[in-house]
Image 1 (cartoon, helix red, strand yellow):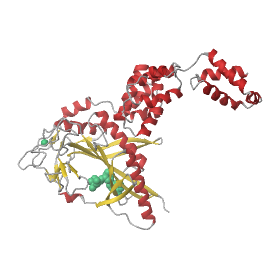
Image 2 (cartoon, rainbow, N blue to C red; image 1 turned 90 degrees about the vertical axis):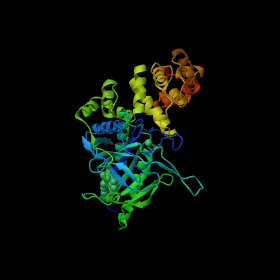
Image 3 (cartoon, rainbow, N blue to C red; image 1 turned 30 degrees about the horizontal axis):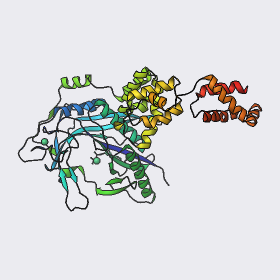
Image 4 (tube, rainbow, N blue to C red; image 1 turned 135 degrees about the vertical axis):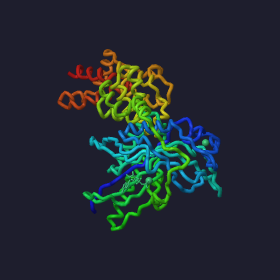
Length: 476
Ligand code: ADP
Ligand code: MG
Ligand code: ZN
């Protein structure tokens, strides 16, 4: 078996959260009744003229600024010609030779190793509609609400070397678009979607191997698993002396595999040409300066600020800032209770566990800053132990529940009273003379046995620090 290196390049489509579509004034919104947000322009009637949405240009430029790219202050729209029922114009309006943005980068860090990933280009384009195939019918519906909505496509250099790096890059891009406020980033609705180009080559080889393009990756987890599968599949093929076929493959999450969809067309098959209905996109120096001066705080800057302002360890700050929803929640709760380290610990421990187990997206999170801040406070002031906090945490996830009231109602308040604890400790020691003798004979590890017995007697409500102190005193 030879040693191969994986080479990955990502194409990410981000749906821009403008009020109207890219070239008409139809609402740019999701979930409405089919074909209600449609006009002559976005349904491709003959003789109509598109008018560019300036807000989309601003949003695309903000992303370009965030990745330190060159912004072409004069770019151009092109027609990408192909036929598909969800696209009545028979061409997509995209950018080809002169995209809005080129030569950017984004730094990622995986397992402590920092790497700079090149971003080839960002261009603007309009989205297609949606075909809906009713189960058991021999016809399909077409919904054009999405047709003509604004997208940016962010194309990376083939600089990524593993599935982990690809996911780290994607998560960072995702946090950026959400922080910039240019997209809601919802992956399930397809507002942030990614195709992964994957190839492998023998270690030390500098030429690129033949790639496949993976589609249908609608979560970070699927991106990870699809790339891992594809690297393994290509490795097996090369090891067996076979060749990789350049093609588009669909990821099947249920079976965790990729299967061929179609052979990859070459770019010229789309017969790109400049769209004669649209003027070049011109961005003035004043516009660019104004956008640059009003960029929101980006995840990297936020992370540094969390380390300075809240004294969080780098790893914790990085994990929180990976997701703007979590970062906002942290910051609000930390300000409310003045216990940033405690809030971070709760979020990265109990909250992460709940999110992972339930698969809930953070955008659907019901836990708010007030209960979170109160939980931090009552742990900090000794009202409850971490253990009790973890026990009630799943209930707090439902939202609208204040933890202090909950623990009082349930009688879960921690006992720190030395007298009460001494009495229980003495009772436990009296009931286990053999263990006491063994402890005194040098088996000091038995202390955790005694702690366990005391906790059982007191139904987990004893303050562990006070119990330990009492044991040390009464066993001396
Ligand atoms: P297309 O639009 O046909 O998919 P592009 O040239 O725009 O083609 O490339 C798309 C993506 O594929 C880019 O992110 C690029 O980095 C990546 N890519 C190109 N060649 C390879 C390769 N051999 N292995 C992995 N990724 C590649
Ligand atoms: Mg592609
Ligand atoms: Zn329209």
